[in-house]
Image (tube, rainbow, N blue to C red; front, side, top):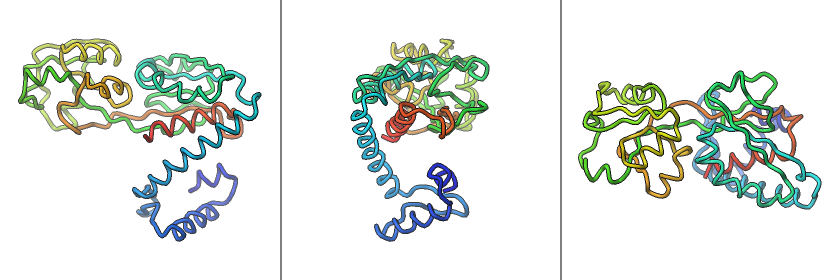
Length: 271
């Protein structure tokens, strides 16, 4: 409520009053209140999605009516795996309404705190401390093992205790798989073989070849999961690994293209 009031330049009580009036008019609870904390109810989430979609369409049309507003350049930076496997396949949905906008993509390294490129929008993982930037949580990252459907055919009883007969594919030095075992309260099993791929993208690609199991998430592994090339052998079992943060200029300095990109990516994340 406080952040909404600050963005709208009104008092917090004014925002609270408007929310209360909306709930009364709809005869629905939009927020679940627990002490000082607020979370959206299922009705609130449904309304949020509809409102975001409508506002995005209105904003896009208004911007199109003013050719000069979106005729410049928007610089977006993101980690390579996130950009390649989630962002790039969806960018046409953002760019199509703005034919005069130039987009420049930059890659964020594994240590962005000292190497963050000059951008309008940056997506970073687990590191929100960038003085002078407005950092907001984009999504909580849930991770899970993935493998090919064929791997299950050869190991129909695959579960967390039978991984000792499998190959584990790592994007790091083994810490991610160790965290998964710890999150499930399991013994740190010694698999048949380790493969150290070095990056999330390469680990996913090796898993797609059927060599073994990798750890992935629904963003960087979205395409392979949607196509059925990879599956989640342990069902909905996940572990919380961290957060993606969105970095922009402060609200009073953010450009119209950057503001529109922020609205668009949050809407895509909610789908």
